[in-house]
Image (cartoon, rainbow, N blue to C red):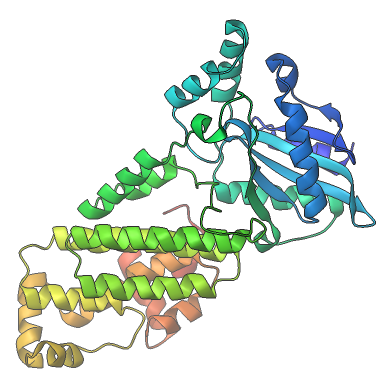
Length: 397
């Protein structure tokens, strides 16, 4: 048994994924699915043409969005820079979808009622897989076929249009993201910390190429998507009470980070950090309405500069107060000293870095301006009852 077949069998134990094998001309040789047979549609003939074109144009694997907003992973074994055998995993959904919209699209087709019912039943049972997991599967698939290790930045993401109804494609396509997007922005405006759980229910949007002219530049497409998301989140946070200057400063920083990123994983990490950052900032504002403007501004400054060398003296000077006055006011309203609050904010940020970035705890200690790694570990253990390394290996989120 070939390694790709073993991989497909392993993946099928956790996801309902099917392997499709095509020859160099795009003729279907075998499949582990009865999908085409059950549907009785010719859409897979046209789909195979798109698959072959994708494999011919890209030596590295591709993730494509196709009929009924299904997604597929395409990878090929090549000889003389031409695809010799083409392998496809799918179909599955990356984007969340509305069953009502799916039903409307299927029932608009020129098929018998029995075939419409069968098609709808098959489609709504397809797995929904997160984009990052799809990337992992794609890398594994390419390795199984070619014994070549690649990175997420090597992948291609594109959308192909196949008309299965005889109608205009734009009239029959559906997207289930608008409602979810509006819910996410509402949670930002309200500083709703259930945002983390909500994200777990959603998957990334495969249609990342709307702002890019070159379908092959998938990393550029993903960056464009995150830049738009950052702008939307920033505006929602301002509506939720975040100071506009703070929101604009954060937006600029995230724009710079996204543009400097060199891989899918790095961009995805920045996106997650950005989303949680805006939600947490609005949450703190919503739960600190009793604070004076001076204290709220001080807290905002700490949050914005937690990786910088900050001092109460500098903040007091910016606000036009004496250090003594601001120190007493801060402790009176917050219940902790300025230094204690800064330490706690940095420890919370350290916890995030430990779980989401593959950097040594020593580097985290240095970035957050702890006097030594041992002092960082001591403070971390006192607050979270385990060392930084123990926390990184734990199942805590």
